[in-house]
Amino acid sequence: MNAFLIERLADHLKKALDSSVLIDVFSTSLHDIYFVFESIVLKVSFFQGQAYFQIPDFEKLQKKNRLTVYETLKGKKVTSVQSFPYDRIFKIKFKKGEVLTFHLFGRFGQITHYRDGEWLASFPSKNTKIEIEPVYSFTTEDKYAVDLKFLSKTEIEQLQDEGFDTAVEADKKAMLTSLKSKVLSQTLFLNKGEKRYTLDHASGPMNVAKYDDVLNALDHHARLHISHQVYNQTRTSYTGKLTKELSNLKKKLKSAERGLAELNRASSYKEKADLLMANMWQIEKQAKEVKLTSFDGEKEVVIKLQEMLTPQANAERYYKKGKNESKQRVYAQKHLDKIIQEIADKEKEIADFSDLESLKEIRKVTESKSSQRQDRVPYRSTTIDGYEIRIGKGAKDNDALLRSYTTKFDLWLHAKDVSGSHVIICNPSKKSIALSTIEKVASIAAFYSKAKSESLAAVIYTDRKYIRKPKGATPGLVKVDKEKVLLVEPSGI
Image 1: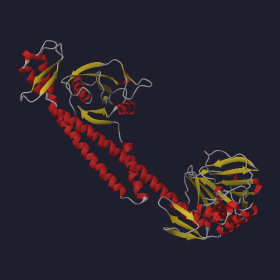
Image 2 (image 1 turned 30 degrees about the vertical axis):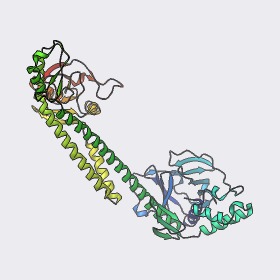
Image 3 (image 1 turned 90 degrees about the vertical axis):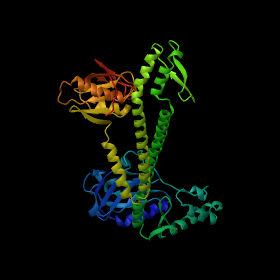
Image 4 (image 1 turned 180 degrees about the vertical axis):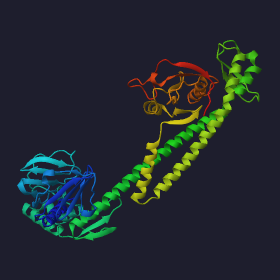
């Protein structure tokens, strides 16, 4: 709000609040405050730091969750409303020296309660306190039109055209007085711009309405401007989240495509085992690798060896790995197909969201998505032998699983010496869990770890009460006591 509009508002309130009693004053949020006078209800919203005035219907005021503000002013009668020409301030004065000063000077505006010049309280409460009322004065001496920050661009240009910048002090005052007199009586136009609604003294290309009553003009501007800004902010913020989610999915797609391509491109474990068996005579003792020609004679295959094993034992090792190779390809293809579908779903979600036009529709979608995220649990689950099994989805989820979804009577499992999911056997009845059940769950723990491609993997397990999270440890890292070890074949759920 510029200084002329504030002065016009103050002049209007002088009539509207003449000898009126302040019945109630309360807030319903950190940024909204209501002044319920006998003659009028005045709502002030501090949106993005700026003050916006509305005149809500008394019958429609929020009845619950009210927080009383400026309690000593309740029941006090207004004695006067004072404006300050060329400044963005006005005061509502009450009996017994109590004053509400509306400091409306930009992004840190506030309403301050004084008694006999002493600061008592401010709203919004987090703003810097103004403890001493300033003395307001204004002079045009040594000022150019552009220095008058309370003027609009159009008003500055008007003064410049009249020769304000080169005029003497007396003429400057006369020009400014004439401009103010004209502006204070002008019709106000509510215009819609590309980014916001504005209240101007001239009709714009997209004029919404015009007003002679300043309070009605401010009321309608506040409602449209705030809702439009919230609409834009909500739309932009949520669109940004959706775009980021789509970008992350596309990164996952590239990674999944590379992984599958490597599996398809690499020589199979079975082929390597067959090559070793067919060329055992070429393999030197304790060799770390061997280069052999493929059976079709078209490429050279590099085979890594465990130097302490015989060629035959190395071949047997590759035959065992070959058992899981086809499973890996199937899993990689399913993973790739799933990501492709998720990308298609996300692109449709973005397209559908871009078609929404009302704030109500946008809020319905964003609140629904927010609720879904809140319902998310950090684990996937299955049931084995009557026990619920919980498998952490990632490092941070492992921490959340241990912190909020386990009890000391549960059993904890994890692949030994490799990264992987924390796995929990829920045991609310505090039973003794059979070893056969533990072995089945250990296979799952091995599958959801870096040891999933091994023919046999070591898995540790212990009671949940023996798992501790060291202070400052990275996500997923824990201290384990009294663990036992099982050797199992990795198997998914």
